[in-house]
Length: 145
Ligand code: HEM
Image 1 (cartoon, rainbow, N blue to C red):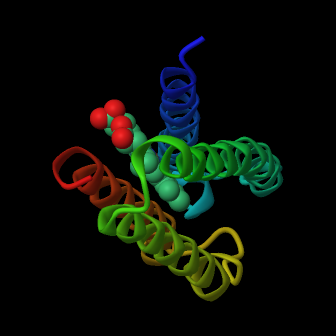
Image 2: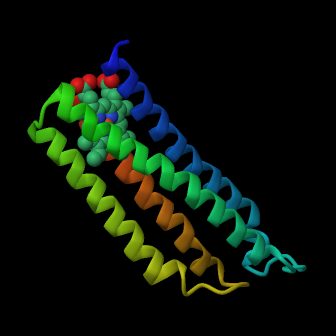
């Protein structure tokens, strides 16, 4: 058994799972936009539907995130070593969590539906933060680590 390959497999697969939930959410938000910004009638149960979806998404993303971080720390501990760029990666992950959480509290939680397209765009800004941070971590991983 090659533990290095196995750990790297878990690290990259859980990251893919986490990233997958981000894209699924962007597609869903885009689909629901006309209803939740009031440009289509029949808002009905859509806000509740979005809440249920986000709950499911968060539980999968949370597991993907934790497994990525734990397997990354194990890779550093047993195989790669604690290099400067590993610490940069850890710093970027902490920054991603802080930025995402504070933006959710400031701009997503206060939303109620129907809202204006401008307010709805806060959802897209939230996912732009996530995708930018993923891109930075991947740039560090492939070019500097
Ligand atoms: C605390 C968080 C993390 C730590 C400590 C960490 C650490 C590591 C280490 C030590 C490696 C192995 C490098 C080698 O082959 O020697 C690795 C590989 C990798 N990491 Fe992370 N990582 C973390 C988070 C992430 C995140 C969030 C992503 C995605 C955005 C990511 C994507 C990757 C990828 C794609 C590889 C494989 C690179 C390759 O095989 O060339 N890592 N990581």
